Length: 322
Image (cartoon, rainbow, N blue to C red; front, top):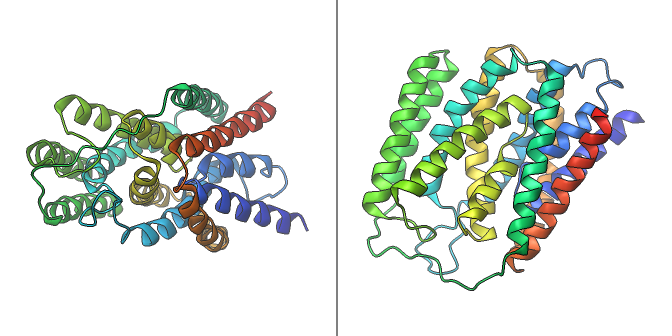
């Protein structure tokens, strides 16, 4: 009976999180931590890997759904901003390497406090965003627009970096990812092939550093990373529809990268992982279709419900820690 409740709650989290365009790692982390004393197999060292691989199914569903969606300002633009994706993913992966290293050095209680502080800061940021006056500002539309072929090269190079990581050539993987990220910065500024942001050195640097910390914290804590990247993109005035779609792909790469690191450290419970992956996969299909209706609302509507979700995470963590 308890097992049914546990998987039912996991499924419910999948619906809620995918409808808001995030992986749901923060809620899953709270849920798994709550049941850690109930199930003998749910040891502390397996919680973060189980959360990461469960979130992976969420990102996979949303990636499949959004990869063919078009931007509302013009049919030639993909809803997913690949210029942002190819910049975020490599630095996110480098951060995940750092996070997995520190996760074995820092006591889990410290990680819990870091998580609580992070959720609090995200709440403050979303509250600030919600308090600001919403404008109908038209997004930047590139004068110079090229086909997405350049993104194929960048994504292929980044994928090579992931493959090196899978075969435990970590240093080589970091070098390839770093080169891929720097190449994305150069091409983004040169070609300006995004309908959502005017690429400058300053915002390229901001997203690069933010992506590193997203990868670091998401791997250290065991969340998918979308909960952190969403406020970052909201701060740059991305619309909720672009954030949800772009997070789906960037989150997919992030969770794949983190899962590889956990697999290398022998922290993956394969049988439990497959069950949770399947349960979450089905529920996320429902949530992803709900997200379509949420995107029709104003961005403040989306930000409000995201804020509620983060506040719930704060309450759950306060109750757990204290």
